[in-house]
Amino acid sequence: MGEQWDLIPLELDPPEHGKFRQLLNPLLSPPAVARLTPRIKERCAALIDRVRGVGDCEFMGAFGRAFPVGVFMELMGLPEDLYDTFIDWEFALLHAPDFGRKAAAAVAIRDFLRDLANQRRAHPTGDLTSIVVHAEIDGRKLSDDEVKGILYLLFVGGLDTVAASLGFFFRHLATDLDQQRMLRSHPDRIDKAIEELLRRFSVVTTWRQCKVDVELAGARLKAGDWITCNDSLGSLDPSEFADPMTVDLDRRNVRHLAFSFGPHFCMGSHLARRELSVALHAWLTTMPEWRLKPGAPVVVHGGLFGVEHLELEWAA
Image (cartoon, rainbow, N blue to C red; front, side, top):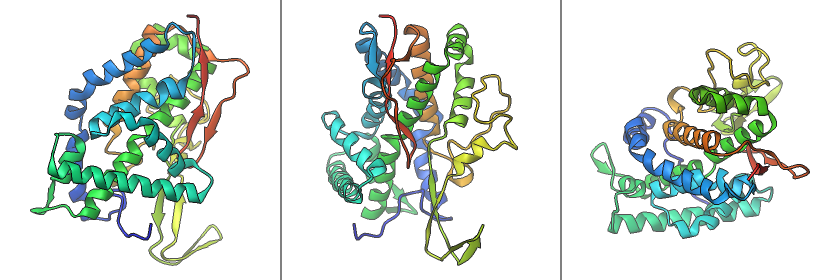
């Protein structure tokens, strides 16, 4: 786009990174998520009611995206009538193979968020966007680029990551009916199972910028190069996890990198875990046993890993 601004706080170094984390962490803290939980459950139940009696659905369109994206749109104050537009932008930005589509989506998201920020400056509504545009750091208002960097990161993270996880989780349970039945019989084990599923299906790929010239495993990297770091592969480290590609719901001491680590640990992790928990509890306790629809394709994508198309069926 010919602009220089950071995704905040992701692309900031200390001490600025810590200042913005202190500002933003309370917005997605456990108490904040607890206040959101009744609405999260309402959205989940409403979406399930639409498909329960049908006997099948394309899961990502009917629930996998609609549920977490709807929650986040409400939290951020995004107009729900633009849901399809936001999903199109998100897919183009993160998954389209054509760079022209990526660039066009990036510009469209920037322009929309800039206009939304201006609206909330003039007429705050108490949503996440309003809080960000009126926030202060070191006794000063945030700059336009700082507001843009925060809102852009929230938009991209909030519209894709939980949906990606739900797609992988539900695909797995559709193919391992023994595990699905076990969780139905023991719903108290669902939250622990989520940690193992997050380990096995970590979706986020991060990036880092080289500060100096260096050679790593025979590859010469130059200062300024941007490097893709698939650190979620640490969740599949065979020196840490026996048989790491297997989903073992009895696995002990599950540590994973699904939410990154250290100073960059995902500030949305509390909301993500709550959404995953609400979704799995609801489907496993109120829906019939689901499985893959025979002959239907399962489409996955890379970049930020996710499931694009997933057809499930059950006894209506």
